[in-house]
Image (cartoon, rainbow over the protein chains, first blue to last red):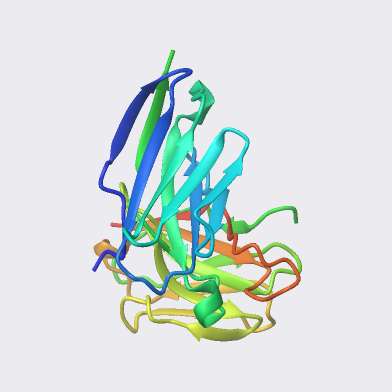
Length: 115
Length: 118
């Protein structure tokens, strides 16, 4: 039972354009959502997060949008740069519901930004 | 150290052997997590600790898998009688802990231990 789903395994975007990565979840008890970025041969690194009490969080070129009614979140990267090419994982937790940082991850989306 | 350190980085073993994977978390981090990641998949939760207490082991696949963190710092994930299906990247992560002084919900991952069972 995949509680966090990333239905697009890959995405290709031209440099300077917007990249939109999508994530859906099934458990309405999730109260914290994060995006992680992973380069080859490295561990995932934290990118941006959002609490379930918000619907948007912005950090520089990265913005995460949360639609609780649709159980959907998205990561927008604008403008996209070649260095953004990586695998992006969506993750969710029950941080405030059950006082744990345990993360449930999606399967990832490979983003390729070409010149 | 500055980051989460895992050893060995690569382990090749024969089916039936026991393996122990070590994780040294970021100093001061309360929570420590073990994940397993198959190729093309996201990290899959195995177990986690707050200090030395194992809070959740619901992700351990079977009783051949065990983990400990006896002094609330370094942790060892042990796989007994390894099988080929155990081959994967095993990732350790640590965090300040939910509700702790730095409550970002962020987990810091190590580079992983790649296990290959022949």
